[in-house]
Picture 1: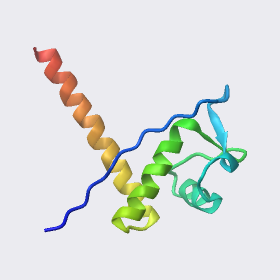
Picture 2 (picture 1 turned 90 degrees about the horizontal axis):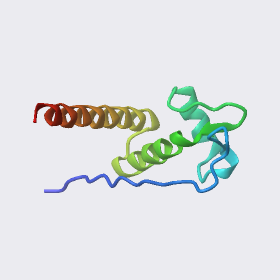
Picture 3 (picture 1 turned 120 degrees about the vertical axis):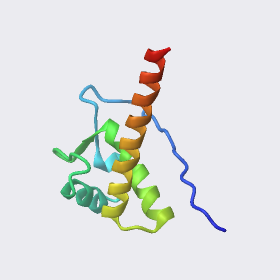
Amino acid sequence: MSGYYIRIHKSSYEDVPENNRITIDELPFQPLILERLAALGVIDIQESTIPIDQVDRVAKILRLRQFLRVNLSGAAVICELLDRLEEQDDEIKRLKRQRE
């Protein structure tokens, strides 16, 4: 029996600009992919920059795309669902702590 495993990576950028945005030229992603993600509403590109907090999301989507062999839209949906599950898990933990 084979299975799929998702490895979650965290990254940080040392030199975060004041506006918390980074130019797409500084990122290790193809600009066309970033434009497609922006067209899907997954990221927000303004003046060739994206918010720092969306960089990890892009990387996660591209890993999902590669490892699960889904298209970009599918990877974006999976990423959104994973985020929702994480939020629900956090909410459950918070409610359990309140109950104690």
